[in-house]
Image (cartoon, rainbow over all chains, first blue to last red; front, side, top):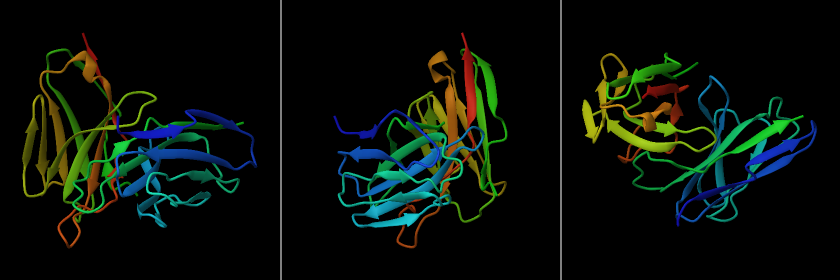
Length: 114
Length: 117
């Protein structure tokens, strides 16, 4: 079945460590996104990529980095520079041109910094 | 600055009754709106959308109403069912000059709907 796979589902890290969250899609979608969900703040856009080897900062990109070397993959690295990394992270994808607004989301990764 | 606002964090409704979830926006450039439904520990799933050329869009038990002059939209669920209990997010986007929606959605903070049996 086509879909978006995020891993790991739960992740713990110590302060000062970088961590990479995986996102893979087999929907043949051009665009991929990373959102962060915090209680009472909805979903906020971290980074997005509309095509391979290209990506743009979202509203809260500081302390994060991404790469888009393959169409299917859009990993997110949470660096030690991110001041408040504990959150629920959601990856999404959509078709590129002719997009109607529907994002397809993965099941999310919950990161907890100890 | 919250461009998309859902002022009710939670709503409780009896099974069979109507659920009305509200959403307000401030950016007049938004002209495409979507509702997403989210269960705990899962990703949101698309529910229904509406563009600014319409004031109503219906899909089964779900209807979205758009009032552009008031910058307000609402989602009606009739009749409400216990399985509808979830967090509902309103999201907004703007059309690009070539007619497609931009690839960037702005989400509201969500409303937790509880449908009581």
